Image 1 (spheres, rainbow, N blue to C red):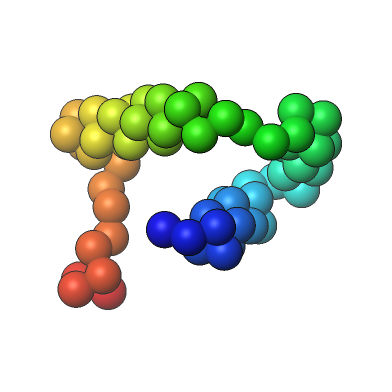
Image 2 (cartoon, rainbow, N blue to C red):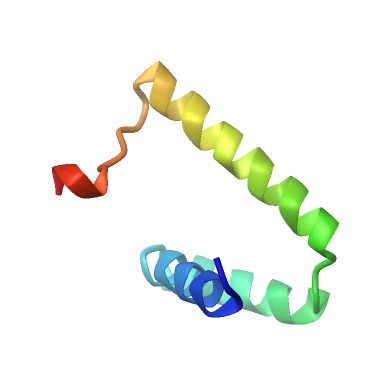
Amino acid sequence: MGKTDLEEAAEFLLANISQRLAQGLREEMATRGKVKDKDAEEAMTAIITAIRTLEASGEISLIHPEDA
């Protein structure tokens, strides 16, 4: 994923949560500034692991592009 793809993904996520929560996240992102690549990779790995755990337990179900 390039920077543009990551920005698009972030904007998609922010657009699909409450405006209040999205604004708070935007403010926090602006305050924190640039994230180190290592820290970003660790965070993405933690998020992916959590999503996979939720899917495996049946708490969420993901829509695969070929199913859409």
